[in-house]
Image (cartoon, rainbow, N blue to C red; front, side, top):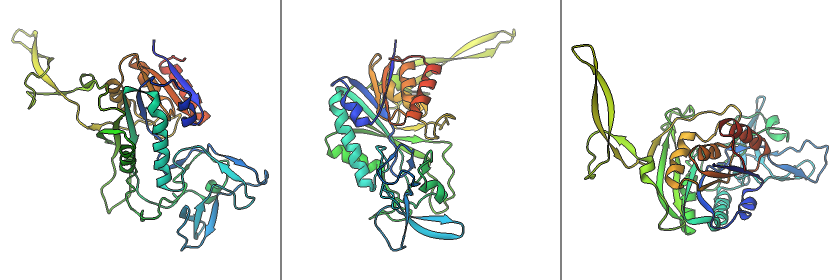
Length: 358
């Protein structure tokens, strides 16, 4: 019987507690840089009665820190999203990935995470890393009072991602930068998979195509690794070029005879190796944020990259979808999540859909 274990805390700290050479597969989607503050931080020191504002007004020519535009009534000004309160000096401690001041720091934290994961992986292990790109922009159209107060649930685009060589409206290219950094750190980048979304988030842009995809990197620690191509092969009609002996099956169709009886007709079909463009619709989870991992996206990663009975790790467990898919496909799972609210959601979903815990 498959089992799911959920660990609460910092992902690197919890990964260090895992047994070495024990993980068969990693499937994960870390928080994207500058996309969302999930409100996991706490304030240390300062005045406990202070509302702890995080936005500080600055001059328009300032180019350091998290500079971005905000609106308050008819007034437009600049702001910096800080990790300390300018009113009382309290410092904010937040272990959430994605809130680093620069994308370089964010990428380095991803590299450090993978360094912590590597000794826990079997030599045959695979890693499937989902990461979506974004365009450099200022603070999202969130009310200032909702950004500067500490009692918010989460904030979209909490700071400007315009900095250094990243100009306004630039494609930041974080997924590619991460892949190159991991490759430079000794990992094998085996495949770049395009997750095509038929129902992407709407965009009002008119000077570029609408974004409708994210990337999944297939990454390994060794030259040889476990990969079950047959488990995720695709159906194709007719003989496939290059396949001398294609695997063959049948689709049964029925036609009506002159006597009014139904006669079965066998139509042959063939299989081909799964391509690296996966068309999968996004499916919201009403209990969690809208960035929930689709089950259909996780399933081929687990089927191809983890043997039955193996262990799947997700360092950013979120609402538990990776664990659910692993259990439904006869794999075990270890999920790590910083936010207790999402652990509560994951526990409810797993109990309802699977009912398996360690």
